[in-house]
Image (cartoon, rainbow, N blue to C red; front, side):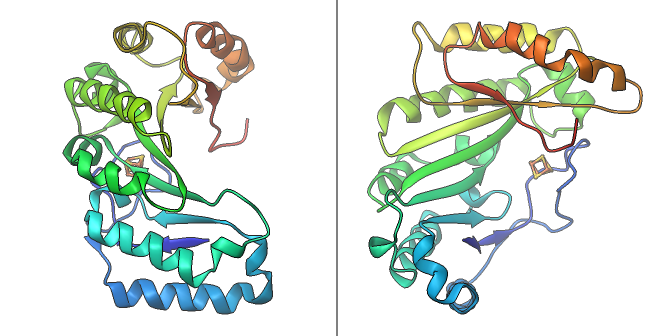
Length: 238
Ligand code: SF4
């Protein structure tokens, strides 16, 4: 069940198909309560068949920890998730390079105590500056590397939190993209780990349309070198 606690996004990534024209701005607690009320009306008696909440929109980690915790706990109580027909309530959130770097560990301590298992997804896209520039992602490779190291540290510290990350995948990307990704992997792992899933999002355009036939083969080659779960993530039809 989706609740928006903040609108807008910190970036204007060139490849993004879902970007918001709005600047990042938190919503009020009253607005969040209204959304929850509408959702309760919308789901009616069927609400007991749902056990998960999405807290949006593009970067709820950039919102204040107080607002985030308020929304999660308010939704949990209002939707009566303690008595849902499905076990294991889950919370889904998007974060970003900058919001993950900026967030204090106290935020994750609080999240760990929520009555949810929390899944945060962060679009890192690349740890190579040339690729980031080509994508029009307004961040630096150093920031991406810092965010990735923090993501994996949080995954190791907190049992109830899993932060996953997205990287782009495509034939037209600079050679440094995969090379730098593998260096980041090497410097963050010395053995496999069950959390911290990495998703690869294929970039397909009119020029490289033939490449899509190779995606699975190329992805499986890469997957064997990644010590955490990894998957292709498709926002477009192949
Ligand atoms: S950070 Fe995410 S939502 Fe925002 S523009 Fe980039 S890809 Fe789109």
